[in-house]
Image (cartoon, rainbow, N blue to C red; front, side, top):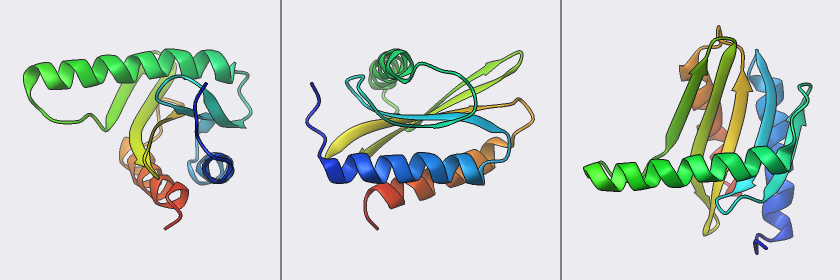
Length: 128
């Protein structure tokens, strides 16, 4: 099991709720450890946080392997654009822990705004 402390879990829940409130068109937020344990969730859309956390941690690991293979550094963002929406994943370091933040949005949501709010969430969870 992951060793994320209570403080990070509390910051994660606050960040999930803030992201949902600030990103118009976001329907679900899941914050998880890089090893696939869900820490926080917010949103109206029915999702299984534990399943999403496990799947997205695998996607993040694949992104890291692909980035390393082609020599482009550490991945920060993955986007899955589908016919009815997007799954945006931000990889981040918070107090020495690798986390992934998942934002599920409609397809009309501006990605730049999502990225901006994800950067703010990283600062929030870091206690800054």
